[in-house]
Length: 92
Image 1: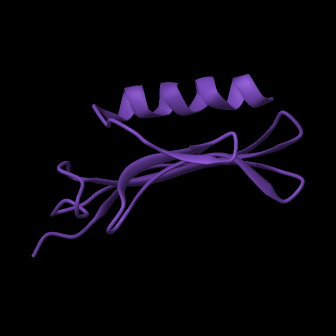
Image 2: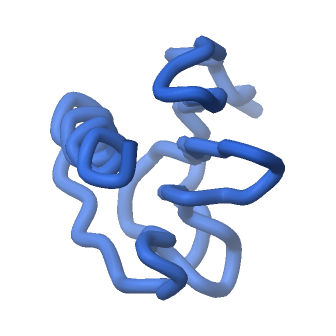
């Protein structure tokens, strides 16, 4: 059986907080997502998550922004990272 493979892991101080991104290539999609990636991207400042993107089992692709949880349409890793960083800059 194929194993998950780490594609991206970074943790940096930015905008007075921490920006962390982790992306795995997984052998099977995480339901209900339809792609072969598991990801968690988060911006935390003063102990509070201000922006988050993830695809939790049972919830699928979604983002946390401005105190709301919203659906997210995943297309590819580059777009995911760009969308996340754009949201971080909006709240920074």
